[in-house]
Length: 206
Image (cartoon, rainbow, N blue to C red):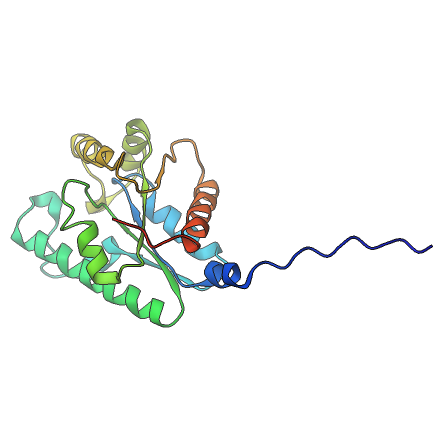
C-alpha cells in the first residue's frame, strides 16, 4: 500500500492574509537613544511588503539656512519647525498608505502633551496609526546617546529628563518594548508581532 501523504495544512483565512499584507502606519515613540531610527530602518528594510521609513529628524533637517536647533534653546522657531516637520511626515505617510505602501515614523512623543503628541499624529496620518513605545533602561539610553553626534546628541541631563517623561507611557495601554537587552533584529520581530495582532483587532483606542 503506498504511503498516505500527510494532510495538507489548512489554508490561512482570507481575512488574515489581507490583514497581514494591508498597509500600516507604525509610529515608534521613545527618547533619544532608544534606537528608534535604527529599528525603524531595519524593520522597513526587512519586511516582506513594501514599507517606507519616514524620519522626523531627517525632515526637520531639510531646513538648512535658518534651521532652529532645539539644543540652542527651545523657542517659537524650533516649535514651529517641529510642527511643520510633523505635518510633512504625516502628509507623506498618507500618500504612501494611499498607494499601498506601509510606513514607519519615529518621534519623541511625550505622554504629558497628548494634543501635541499622539493627537497631532492621528490628525496628520489618520485613525489607523499604530503607536509603539521603545523604552530601554536609562543606562542604555545614556550609552547610546553618547554615541550620537551633531545636534542629535543631547546632554546626559537632558537625555535623562526626557527618559523620565517617557516613563509616563506605562499604564497608557500602548504596546511598550523594553529593548535594553534586545538586538535590532529581535526588536523588529517584536514589532511584527504587534502589527500582526493589531491587524485582526479593532483600531487602537487612544
